[in-house]
Length: 194
Image (cartoon, rainbow, N blue to C red; front, side):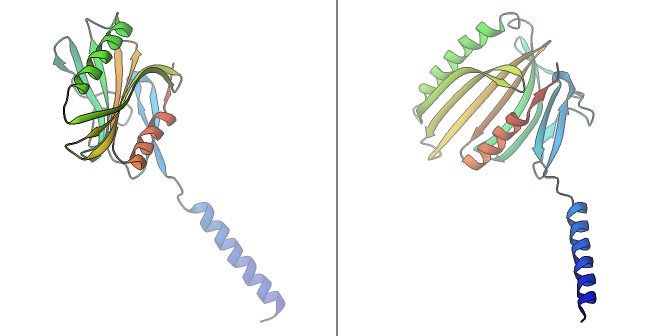
C-alpha cells in the first residue's frame, strides 16, 4: 500500500469515526414538566414512572381525592423496590394553607415523635430545615433510621413547597445510597418557573 493510499484510508476512517460519534444518540436523560408548579426536572432515560397524573404537556389530568380537609393527587411515583421509592403529590388544603408554615412545624414534631415510638426502629438522625430547590423554598423533613424488621438503614426525605393554591410534596425513601443519589439528582435538576 502506497503512502497516498494509506493516508486516504486513514482520512476515511477518521471521517467515519467523527460522523458516528456526532450522530450517536448520547442523551442520557429526558426533561419532565408539570405546569401547575412550573416544575421542570431531568429524569434518567431508563427510569419509568409507575403512574403519572399529568399529560405530555404537563397538565394535571387526574381528579384530586378528598381526605379530611385536604385534596391530593399523586403526580407520579417510581419504585426500585420496597425500600427505595420516590413520589410527588399535589395537595390542596383549605384549612391549613394560610397557616402553612406553622402547620408544617407542628406536623414535623408529631411525625418525629410517632416514629420514635415504634419499637422496631432505631433513629440515627433527624433534621427539619428549609432548603432551596430550583429557586423555591421547601420545608425539609429527614429521618435516618435502622429498621430492625428489615435489618436495613433507611433514609426518609419529605420536601414541602407552597405554590399558588397548592402544596407540592416530594417524598422519597432509600436504603441503597446509589439509588438515593438518583433521587437527589431529580431535586438538583429541578427548576420552577415564576
